[in-house]
Length: 424
Image 1 (spheres, rainbow, N blue to C red):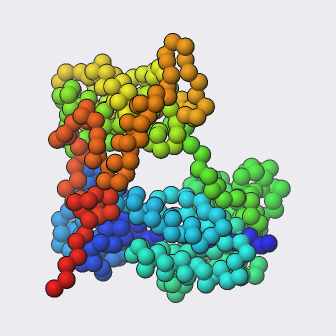
Image 2 (image 1 turned 135 degrees about the horizontal axis):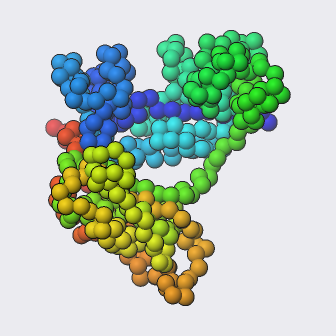
Image 3 (image 1 turned 135 degrees about the vertical axis):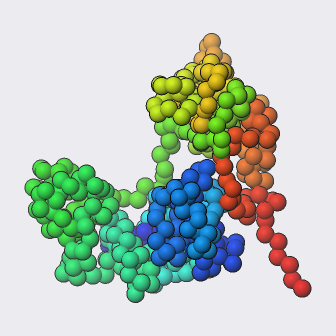
């Protein structure tokens, strides 16, 4: 059976999510900002045509965006994450297997499909009709060609968002590869691209036509396999099961400088609780917790910057345990008079909760009562929205939270924000 992969990528995902529940944004340029409304991280097609630069600081563009009538939004991660989950579930129903690659893209195994191009158009229509999300679909006999097909589909309007490189003969495929710079090939990147250019390989066609043994001797097996994939030889299988993370981190900048110990401890408790929630989601316990606070000076070991590693005995994913450890660490790290702008917590040395062993002196890490409490809290927050139930240690007002002056409602994850439709 000939392999066939589809790579589905939602276009301008964050900006597209903002439009789903706000029809007034149709046709209007939209930009989404990073944490603390710092920089532009997503632009609609209309904003791109206006020349809004990616990554530009918002304060330098604010006047220009207002004059051009651009709609500006703070990052609404709850909305984007929920729409991403819905999109991935929808797409999974059309394929033999799925690999979720990022928040807005995935690979699908369509091997054995009689008309993959027609199915690709159905996928695109399903995302738009079911969720209001525009997307492009690339098809190919390898993941690398599917990724490249998606890239080309985004650039050529005549393709209407879908391109099948698997249906081309060798000559036509090489013609398609020739205009593609070698750095744009998935897995190459800038540094390897520079080395390939020095060897006379400047585009995807030249890479595909290079003698394989020489390529492997000069640049290694991974590069040789990328060339194989460009020739249509599938070397990369779908990774349908995600490996558990080896570490879990939560960190955010504050909306303003923080000097009070109590506020720093609230922030640390909030990050620790987020980390604990993610640990429970993947079924892990943490042996160690690294807690850091950062001032304006660069580097974690200069000025008021400091961090500390705390051992958790026994290993835990209980929000209360991690929050208490984080607060105690912050109390030891805090310096009076220093203005802090960021705090973070990272859990590492993770172990599968189903395989952990009890410690004679530290006790049993799998306390049944604590586990039931955490399960109940997670269930409520999943159903009613994150933060519905949280630790008092996280604070109630949280004046230090990151700035989100342009935040849209959490239409799908918070009861109070569910759209209400009225008919006369």
